[in-house]
Length: 82
Image 1 (tube, rainbow, N blue to C red):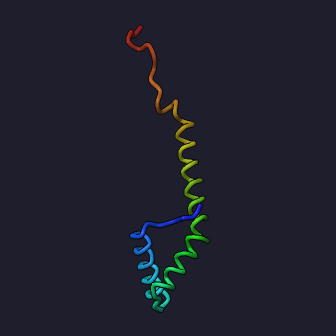
Image 2 (cartoon, one colour; image 1 turned 90 degrees about the horizontal axis):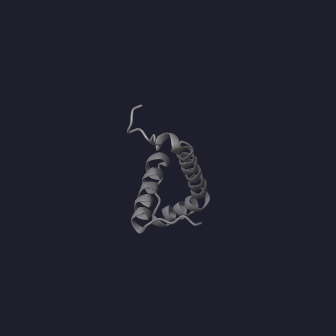
Image 3 (tube, rainbow, N blue to C red; image 1 turned 30 degrees about the vertical axis):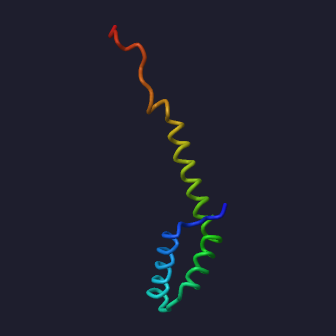
């Protein structure tokens, strides 16, 4: 599954990449280099982050489902306090 960004998110990400390179590496890069770097990161690093996020979400929901009875259980026939 290819990771794609909205036009707005891509523009903000490219601006952030350009600022990072300028402030941390003391170099200015243009839109083309920022776009190439962004495409590389989305293709190479993006799947690692995506897969970890899916794994984290799966673990979270598995834990919640395992405790479903404990967190969503109501005692039955409690009207009469015998």
